[in-house]
Figure 1 (spheres, chains in turn green, brown):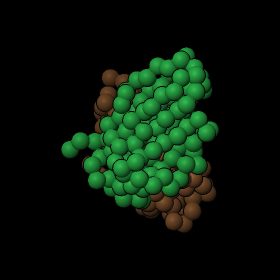
Figure 2 (cartoon, helix red, strand yellow):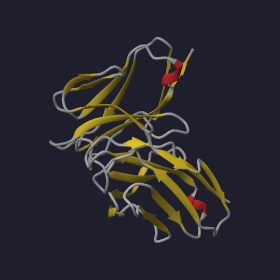
Figure 3 (cartoon, helix red, strand yellow):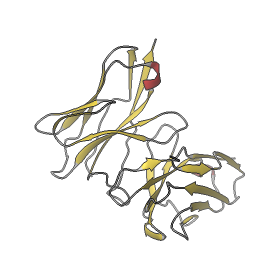
Figure 4 (cartoon, chains in turn orange, red):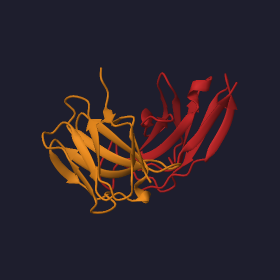
Length: 113
Length: 114
């Protein structure tokens, strides 16, 4: 079956631009997570949704980062006024229910010039 | 959160058995040990999880001593396609989200040569 998909796979932005990254979780998965992975590092947790409710956003690095999942399926991670330090791979993961195994998408590689 | 320590990199050859050891001295009673694998340009993929003694699946084995302060991921007869980064995580079973969710370290970069 289809796994988690993310788009775009690659995004280049000029510093100060806004970007939107999309995640399509596995159909029927209740939980959705966003992670940020810097070069040479492991993924770091950003935020968590249960259906449309954002239950934890403690990992978002600044108020320039915003995530939504309005209908409890597709999620969008938005970064406003991008900075060079935002350059990273942004990973999305979903799980059937909270506490279940997480399935990761391929990630979106964001490069801010 | 229990901190994990694992080698930054390892090399081996095709057909060999590879053992990657992870230290987690402060593991809590309710914590499980989970290993993920990540290939370039892909997200991490769950490999195996265990609590104590030995767990085996079609991909790997996980050895956990009685004191649970370390664990060893064993990959039998590796091939070139096993070249990847391997992460050792200590957490509640399949827990996700929040400060107590999946916490990845830098992982072990395993390189398999012909």
